[in-house]
Amino acid sequence: MDNGFLLLDHVRVPRLNLLQRYITVAQGGRVSRPKNVDPKVAYGTMVYVRTQIVRNMSQVLAKATTTAIRYAAVRRQFSGKADKRVDGESPVLDYGMVQHRLIPLLAQNYAMFATSQAFAAHYAESMAELNRGNFGPLKELHATACGLKRWTSDVAIHGIDTCRHACGGHGFSQFSGLNEFFGNQYPNIIWEGDNYVLSQQTARFVLTQVNALRAGKQIADNQTTQYLRAHLPGGHLPKTAPAFTQMPVADLASNSEAQLQLLGFRAASMAAELADSMAAGQSHNRSLVAMQRLCDAHSDYIVASYFRRHLRTLAPASPLAPTLNKLATLLFLYVLEQHSADLLRLTVGAFSPAQISEVELLLAQVIEEVREQAVPLVDALGITDLRLNSALGRSDGKVYENYLEWAMEDPLNREDTGNAIRKQWFEKYYKPVLHAAKNKRDARL
Picture 1 (cartoon, rainbow, N blue to C red):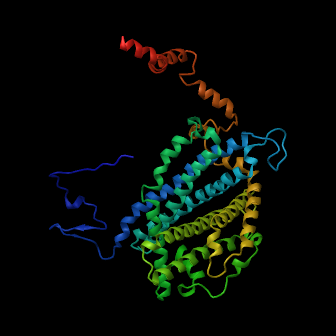
Picture 2 (tube, rainbow, N blue to C red):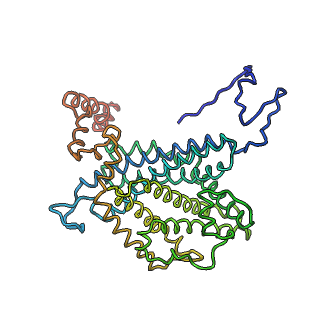
Picture 3 (cartoon, rainbow, N blue to C red):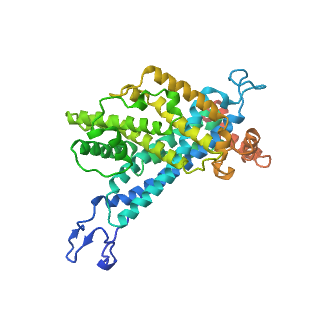
């Protein structure tokens, strides 16, 4: 990406033509801001760009998951190693380790699509309020945008790399379409706010709300303060463990409301713990790592909340509902499995090691169930072969035929040009090396 600047010399812009909605330049040159304008109004443009990144990351990851899952369903390797009995060698997608790497990415991908649409609507509503002179939603909108930009770009970029690895050696071929794609998308974790820095913005907002609750101050009603109020009465953790932390994991997995409560309680607990540490004198610098974890926990809750909200728009009898709800449950279990330490260290309502084991076993079971629908789920993402640009992810499943066809289209391998190119390369590169000793002797003579 190239950046530039515009330098104007001896150019006078009439005050009538200045964009002075939120900043005023008086005739004498004095710059001022109207008293009813929040200085953070400039965040509106940044939030819009981050809204677009959230949307783009869902499409970015979709290309990678489509390629990897289609290829893993076609590629066969070894016989009798997978649990499912098949004639001959097993599809790579039937192996547990491949499933554990790819199927949760598919769930995250669908959650991303739901999140991008819900957050875009949230942004539009907040901008409408801002245009009416209500700057109240702006801070929460900015904090959520920071967290979601970090969450979606981290998941997408690392997800592309995981998909590339899962395709084996072919994943690193240019014909996979994943190498250049990974390089092109990687800057998303840095531009429009480095992800490690953005996490501080989100964490600081959450901590500000916790401290306001502790001080008895009035705070705005939004998706962040709702879970903080629910789980931190007066800004502090409850004395007794909430019922949902003691539920069997199988019951949690079938109760979408309890899932959201647990994810919200996890984030609220981490916020309360960090607020306590900083109130006791822990420096901001010493708190940065905890802020990363708090930002991720907050974003896990927001993504799950948006995903569930999106699924509720389906018709009750929709044939899609069972599979998509299973994806949402898979995502929930995956968050618990990946962040089990957060659950074990809860000050109130800590999970037991036995519950963590239940999570791992149930996650493996749900992953196996979703595997049966994995290929239709990536097909439903609707990415054409032209956009995919991958021999491995072709919709017709003819991976090796396309791979060979693409290779034979290279000028080096074509009958009409190959011999001339190989001869030219031999004369220029190989012959001097092969005849190096003779060339030395000739040079001495």
